[in-house]
Image (cartoon, rainbow over all chains, first blue to last red; front, side, top):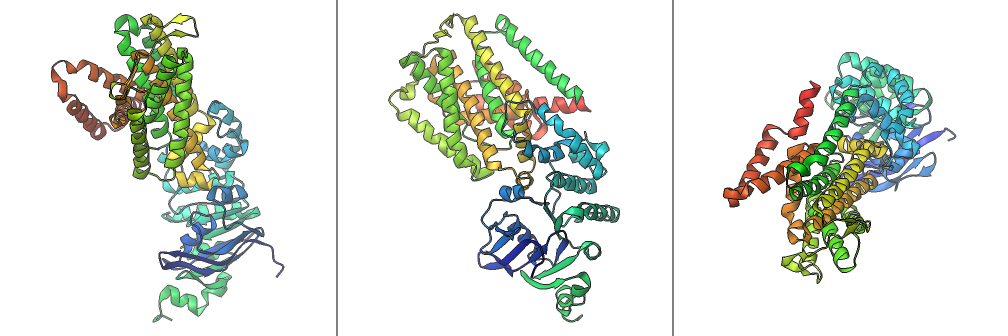
Length: 251
Length: 309
């Protein structure tokens, strides 16, 4: 195969004290696509995410990023390589301002994060870029607000802006629509499409309409193993997938 | 934003004025004790209030600074400022080791590791030949600061101590408001997210722990010079609890809270004993319970919340 793979897993397995949460998962994610990971509750989607970003260590298997083996690296190293994840529950810094949330992501590249003797005013040089990112997700007018006061949907948008601040080669979104109202779903879907323009996205998502709209490739997990992979049309007509989702009797 | 900055400037100015005129109004030795504990509590607050790490072993660093500075000034003829420098470095060095070990766990386990390690330090002081065991390290000379200023003059000593406090306080203030401080706050707020942004949070925690321990060492060394004594009570776990009380009472994660908390606790300890004696711990305990149930943000925290409304 000559397709351009950004991330590949081989035989990825995670056992928790005898319980196999992820079993021999092989995924191939092509560069520049939106790849969705779906499956019923307990299928191992979030565990797979945690394995890919090293928040869990795999029991067996290999993870390749741009052809390099990253299986043994630490979470912060993975992030510095350009794989940045979001979390199922919104991951913001609630008592920092909205602007500071984005700036903390921009700050790392300046290489002065250990300098406890310098004034934080040196960070003001990042404000312009931070505002651009906030404007991109329609949060510009909230810049000086304490993040804890934002409504939920806005927090998710802020989270995406913070992730984008790192200019990641690949974004991993763990249920970006979880807990959102109908309006927000539409807004965030559009936002994800916009930011996917020149990067790769792997997302876990329950809203099948969102998956249908965004996903170039869909991997279906069930009981920790890959059940099917393909376009939305392919997997949705797969009888095994229908069975896993709806149950045998409804075949 | 401007209101907050102005409030802070006002607070620092107030602190300076109070610090400069206090010895004219209050017994200087009492105020020196207050500044030593205020620095200790501020150092502790850097860790608990701004990084979210609860150490229950900070007495260890206070005592490391105290005993080493005391011994250096008494036996090796160190000048007071060198003694304090040594106490600071020693506190930081011990803090680095403690921090490196303790950050492997979080929450209650983190606190318990720091407690266990600080108990080890307590027994070192109890057994070591130079510490005077139960009697403490007595007769530490105050000496001449920079070889010039005679610190046996109580006012000279007072302003020396106040200068040390202000230096430590301003360093902590700067640390909180530095690029490093921003990362610390992000770790406090959401550690997994800080990791996912590419920060090696363990290294930040160790540096925060080391800084906090070093400044606790500064406080301990200064306190030893004030009382010309380093004693086991500085190393006892009561002391680790007391600094938690001071910080929470004054306002966790506020710049001035620990100073107010220290002032209040030391005042109570010094003023209550006539008559109440053994009831002091009970009174302190009651205050603590009232504080954490009725006004959780502490005195300064509640005042800030009031003004922001």
